[in-house]
Amino acid sequence: MSADIELARTNMVENQVRTWDVLDLRVLDVLGRVRREDFVPLRYRTMAFADMSLPIGHDEVMMKPVVEGRLLQAVEPQPHEHVLEIGTGSGFVTACLAALAGQVVSVEQHADLSDAAAARLDAAGARNVRLAVADAMRGYEPDGSFDAVVVTGAVYTIPDRFRAWVKPGGRLFAIVGESPAMQAVLLTRLDADRWNEESLFETDVPYLTHAAPPRRFTL
Image 1: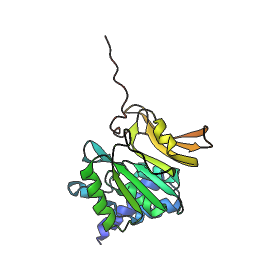
Image 2: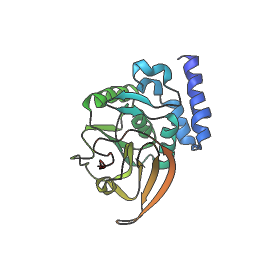
Image 3: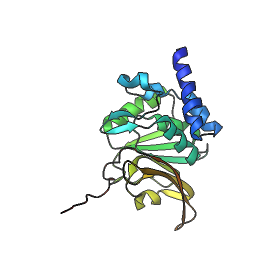
Image 4: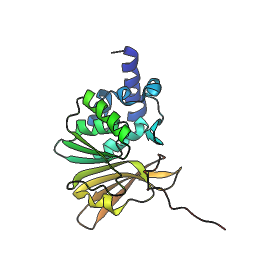
C-alpha cells in the first residue's frame, strides 16, 4: 500500500472532511478505511482524494468527499438498520453505508454502472448490499420500507414515493432545488403524516433522470 496514497487519504479525512464540520468518529473512520481510489474510474484515480466531483459516465458524478461525509453524518446509519440508496453510481457511498448499516439496497438505472459497482463492492468485501437496476423515479418499488433513504442525485422536489419508503422515525437525505444553489436536506418522519425538515448545506450535483425542474416557456 503506497505511503503517498495513505497520506492523501489522511489529508482528505483530516483537512477536507473533518474541517467541514464532519465530527462523527464512525464516519471519519469509515472514510479512512474504505479505499476510495478503488471506486474511482481509472483515468481519474490520481484525483481520488481531491476536493472535487469526478465524472463516472451517463452525466453522473462521484460527489466531493466533503459532501459524502456530511451525508453519512446526517443520516447516521446504525448497525441494525436497513438503508435504501437511490443512485449507486461508483459504489463508494454504498460501501460506506454498508460499513455503517446492517443492510443496504442500492438502486441504479444504468446497468453498466451497477455492474461496475457490484465488482468493486465485492472486492471491498461488502456482503450486506443488494443492488437493483431500475429507475427510482418511475416504476421501481422496493420490498418494504427503510430506516433511512439516501438520494445521491439531485431532485427538484422530493417525490412522495420516496417519502413513502421511509419508516416512522426514519430519515431521508436529499439534495433539492435548482442548480447552482441546491440545498441538502434531512427529513425525519415523525409519524404517518408529519415530518421534520432540517436544512444542512448548499451544494450542486446532477439531477436524477426525470427529477429536473420543469421546463419554463417564455414568450
